[in-house]
Image (cartoon, rainbow over all chains, first blue to last red; front, side, top):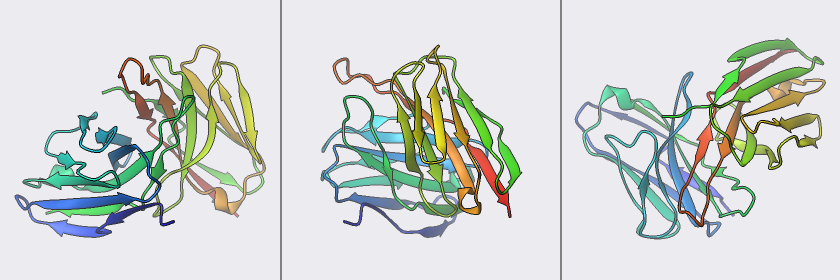
Length: 114
Length: 115
């Protein structure tokens, strides 16, 4: 099993350009998440999904859109990139747990917006 | 948005020393979790705690769920160079029945171990 994979690993954009980050998981998890990680800010939730065809906003959703057309994939889109979106983006997935949800993370995508 | 405060933000320690870090919140959680992020990778779960006052160990790691349910502590004994990384706490307070979802990560503690 590959677990959670993310593409691309690195990307440089110019302000105003658009791009889509792809996340795929092969663990048949219901839940998927997109986070951004900035120095001193920890992991902040952008959007998440509790199942195929559903999405919900997280803590910092502005400037991002997501889609979950297939259970195993979760796409994060930036329609018009801004320098403030320079960050490392992590995708994660989990199964619902009665007691706790263990989130499994991908290796991250480092995005620079010039 | 709500954040969990971790302290210290960073620490340099000598190999063999014990390490302590904590995580505090203004609201209560049903579950506390601790993750570790190695350089260049995503976080990986270390320990999960789901009962107030609970003390749980995983090898050299020991974590405690605060009695108020608003804090948690992580201790690492006899640190080794591979302990280097960022440690994140996370609080989980979701309820599938009510449809609410709360899973919040802390700001992280960056650990560097000097050989």
